[in-house]
Amino acid sequence: QVGVLAVIGRPNVGKSTLVNRILGRRAAVVEDTPGVTRDRVSYDAEWSGIDFKLVDTGGWEADVEGIDSAIASQAQVAVQLSDAVVFVVDGQVGLTDTDERIVKLLRAAGKPVTLAVNKIDDAPSEYLAAEFWKLGLGEPHAISAMHGRGVGDLLDAALDAL
Ligand code: GDP
Ligand code: MG
Image 1: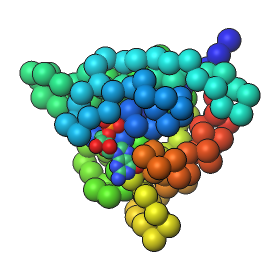
Image 2: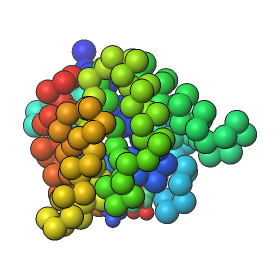
Image 3: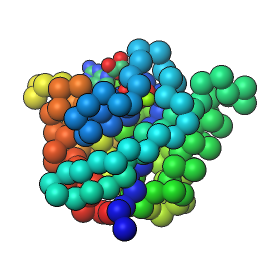
Image 4: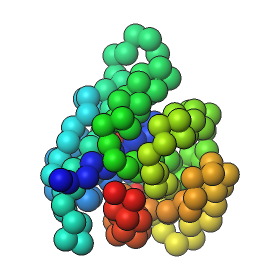
């Protein structure tokens, strides 16, 4: 019985880039335009000898109800189907209202959450992660999905929760 780890967060924070980094190949679609990931895509993944399913989320493009409700529904479905969640935020943008709304959904779902502060591409930028302590999700893990910084430590923490 392999656990399911869902990667959620608002568009353009780097969820698909993180999924590709974990898989070690370009399977998930990365785009400069927000919201290109279609639906939820599940991949077989392995880390430190642990097999798990990794779910990339998206599917909000062309959503006529507006981006907020689309994010809410994709996040809810992904969380319901998962055993644990990696919640990705953008350390360069900082904390947004949408991030806070997603946290409320996560809290209601009661699944274990590991917080990833992405786009922390170098050591001098690490201070940007501290702001996210206020989300109340525990330690903000500073990562760079693009360069691979911090991704190992993030996965160790996330898979501990599986
Ligand atoms: P998603 O919408 O959350 O799946 O985000 P994507 O993975 O498609 O990435 C959105 C944009 O952010 C792309 O231009 C990525 O190249 C960029 N990006 C992703 N991770 C990083 C990172 O660690 N550092 C920087 N500087 N850019 C990143
Ligand atoms: Mg994506």
